[in-house]
Length: 433
Image (tube, rainbow, N blue to C red):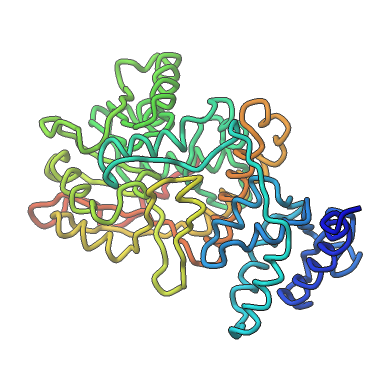
C-alpha cells in the first residue's frame, strides 16, 4: 500500500477529526454531528437533528477553500463533497457560530496548513448544473434576460413540486399562521388586489408576472383587464396556456418583455410588481420608478413587493446565490427604495413588512421539495435539486434572523391633496378567503 493510500485510509480521517475539534465547540454541536466517509461519528454517537456527511477525505478542504464567502460551502454541497441529512436549518446556525469565533493569525495559519494536507482533487461532470456565465454590461437588457433564463428556464415540471397549484413564486400570506400553502397563496393574491383596490374594467400591469397567477386571479375575481410581463419564455408560454384554459383571453395576457421596453403610451390604472424587484439593481432604481410613474394614470397606485436587506444587521451578499441561483440579484435597503420612489414623484402611502410570512413560505417550499426529492430527479440533476434546497432554506434562516425582510410598499401618483385613497386600511381586511 502506497504512503498516499495509507494516508487516505487513516491519516485523512485523523486530520479531519483534528480540524473539526478546532473549528467547533460542544455548544455549537447541540443539534449537529458529523459522519466521515469511513463511518466515524463526531463528536459522538448521540442522536442529533442534523448530520453532515463528509463523503470523501478531501471534503473538509473543499468546504473551507474560501473562508471569505459562502461559495466554497455551497459548491461543496451541490457537488456532493458532503450531504446534509435531517434538519438543514441547523447547518446555518452552525455556520453563524463559526463566523462569530475570533481566531488569531497563528490559529488561522495552522488550520489552513492542515486543510491543505487533505486531498484537493474534485471532478465535476459537465452535464450537471454549472455556475451562471452571464455576459454584457450588468443589468443591460440582454444580460438581464440571460440571468432570468438561468434561474427560471428549468424544467416546467420542477417548480410544481414545491409551489402551490397556481405556481406563485413569492411570499404567501398566512393570516392565521396555520393555513396550508394553497390557502395562504390565494389569500396573498386577494390581499394584493385589495391593497390595489381593483375595480372592474381597470387596466392592471403586473411587472414580473411569473406564471401568470396574479394576472389570472385579478381578471377572474375583480374583473380587471390585466397584462403581465416576464423575461422567461417558459413562464410566458405556460401563463398563456393557463389563460386560454380559463377562457380569459379577452381580459388578460402575458408577454415576454422587459419593463424598460414598455410603450409609455399604454396607460394603466394600477401597477403591481411581486418578487421581481430583486432583479432591478440599485443603480437602476431611478429608471424603474420613473418608468412606473410614466405608465401610471394620475391617481393610480403602484404596489411594489420586494426583498430588502436590513442595514442594522450584518449581511453579506451571497456569492453562491449570485453564481448558482440569481445572477446579478441585488437586495436594496428599504430606505433607499422609498427615497427613489419619492424622487420619481410617488407619494408613499403604506409600507408593510411580511418577514415572518416569507420565512414560513420558504419552510413550506423546502418541506415540499424534500418530500419530492426522488421525483425531482426525473426533471433536474441532483446538483440543481441541492441548489434550490440550500438557497431556500438559507433564505428562510435569513428572514427568521432578521437579516432579510420583505416589504410591500403602496405608492400613489397623486398630483393634488387629498390622494383620493380611503383614510384607513379597513377595506383590506373586510373579508377573508
